[in-house]
Length: 230
Image (cartoon, rainbow, N blue to C red; front, side, top):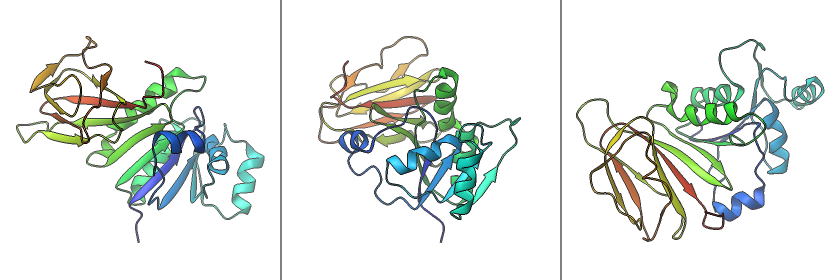
């Protein structure tokens, strides 16, 4: 049977289990598949997770640790060092090939390479992930991408997962239009969010339920726990 919900472990700043539990209770509920992307394999032990598959070129994990994974019977998909995809991207694609409809990527943010973190955000727009529920998750935030239909069609709606008092930022990738919110302190009603201005930054969830609806374009939805500084 194909997995429905998958975790991809990337090699950015490693979140702690306590931090994830505090910020996003139930974050690991119903996980069917855990894919480690190269050095993200080190994150599995810290989070008490068993790895189901490993992908990457091995430059972050190292040969000895990779041999240990092989001896433990974990399927290994070793890529060439000169490749067009990042290790996190390979992890996402492996989860999608396995049949996952929901993918959570951990360890996608932070780390010494800003370009890698930005590339991981771009993974939310990967063509292979179209129509799937993909998110980047960290104690500091949850990042998802809302994509409106290319042609005339019904607006798309996203239910927020944060709690009351948490910060919600709506960041357009290009120009976004027809943005409507519910349950936020500063409401939007069928409004445009053009690229550049920071109007969608630092809203606050105040309702017991909250949502964002998008009519045109692409919109990053970033939910940040209220325990973090503004």
